[in-house]
Image 1 (cartoon, one colour):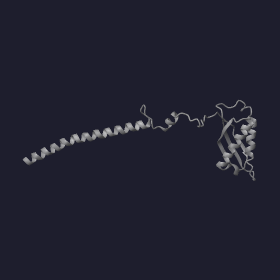
Image 2 (cartoon, rainbow, N blue to C red):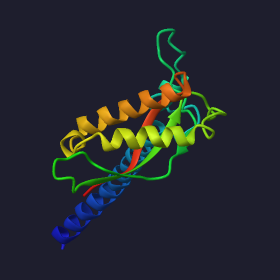
Image 3 (cartoon, rainbow, N blue to C red):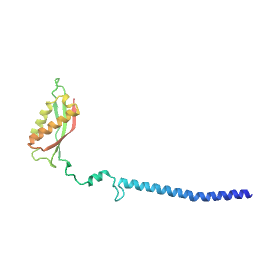
Length: 172
């Protein structure tokens, strides 16, 4: 019996020693999880005063560089769709293009609407002078864009147009 009581006493001591050790492991694990969550919240910029690693915020707060070009979007004006025959030898292809014009200024020039017939005529003349080979590649579309910008600025008699965006471009 003495052996049984000695074994029971050793087992009781082992259980008593295991309980504080398991509590310690749980406490350490909880501290590690909370520290990880806090670090994640700090890096994500959720905590006040954090966000020191937020690249977008750092860029916004960076003082302006004297040599940096600041891009402020200009006014956008949609043009009615253009449908034009392409100048291919067989003459069976046509182009449908819808454009948006971006101006340099925040507002469209006052005389832009008054010059709409000249603008449409100039763009239609340009489109009908192009072949499928001229407009099928990205480089061809970019060259067409630049041609349209040049013609619009010539009609406006100043550099009023910054960019032209194709919102629809179909060749059949």
